[in-house]
Amino acid sequence: MEKVRIGFYALTSCYGCQLQFAMMDEIVQLLDKANIECWFMVDRDSDEEREVDIAFIEGSVSTQEEIELIKKIREKAKIVIAVGSCAIHGGVQSWGKDKELEELWKTVYGDGRVKFEPKMAEPVENYIKVDYKLYGCPPEKKDFLYALGTFLIGSWPEDIDYPVCVECRLNGNPCILIEKGEPCLGPLTTAGCDARCPSFNIACIGCRGAVGYGVAWFDSLAREFKKKGLTKEEILERMRIFNAHNPKLEEMINKVFEEGE
Ligand code: SF4
Ligand code: SF4
Ligand code: SF4
Image (cartoon, rainbow, N blue to C red; front, top):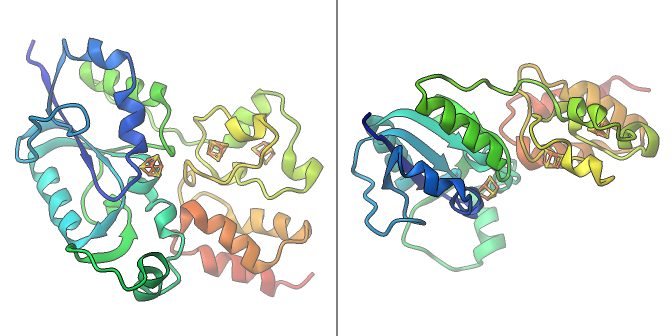
C-alpha cells in the first residue's frame, strides 16, 4: 500500500496546534502509513513545494505572502484541512476586526517595521476551498487521530454540528449561565472539548468557534446576556473573540438592543 503524503503548514499562529499534534505518541505509529513531506516542526528536510495527499493548515491568513502560500498548498494538495480556530475562524487575532489595521499595528508594534506585508487576519476559507475542519484552540488530539485515521482508510470523517451545551448537560454540570448569570458561549460553540471549561465552573469563551454562523443563535444568546445585565459592547466584545468574522454579528446584537425591554 502506498504511503499517504502529509504536509503541515503554519501561517500566523502561536504554533500551538501543530505542537499539540507533534507531541502525540501516535505520530510514531503513523510513520508506517504516511510520509511527512512538509512539517518544519518535526522534519528539517521539509519542502513546501512537494505535492501531498493531505495538507493541514494552521494559523490565520495575515500577510500577502500567506495568501500566495495557501494558494500554492491548495494546488499541490488533494485534501486541505483547516486546523484550529486561527485557520477556521481567523483566531483571536481577528478580535480587533472593527479597528483599522494601522491602529492595531501601532498598538502592538509601535513604530516597528517588518519585511512582510501585513493585512487583517482572516480565515483560510476566505481564499481557498477547505475540505475539512479540525476545531479548537488547539484541537483535541482525538479529533486529529479520528480525522487522519478515517482518511487513511479511504473514508471521510463526520463533522461536529452540535454545541458545547450538549456535552455539558451530558456531564451533569450545573448551568453557569442560568444559575450564576455568567456569559457562557456554550450554546453557540462547536462541541468536542467535552465542555472542558464549564466542567471547571468557568464560562465557555467559544474557543472552538461557532457551530456555523447560519445556525448559531447569537441574537437569542445576546438577549439572555442582556437580561443578565451585560451591555451591548460587553456582549459584542465577548462574542467577537473567536467569531469576529461572523458577517451578521453586529446586526444581530444591534437588533436585540433596539427591541427595548
Ligand atoms: S488555534 Fe489556538 S492553538 Fe492553534 S495556532 Fe491558533 S492560537 Fe494557537
Ligand atoms: S454552562 Fe454553558 S455550556 Fe453548560 S449548559 Fe450552561 S450555557 Fe451550556
Ligand atoms: S468550553 Fe468553550 S472555551 Fe472551553 S475549551 Fe470548550 S469551546 Fe473552548
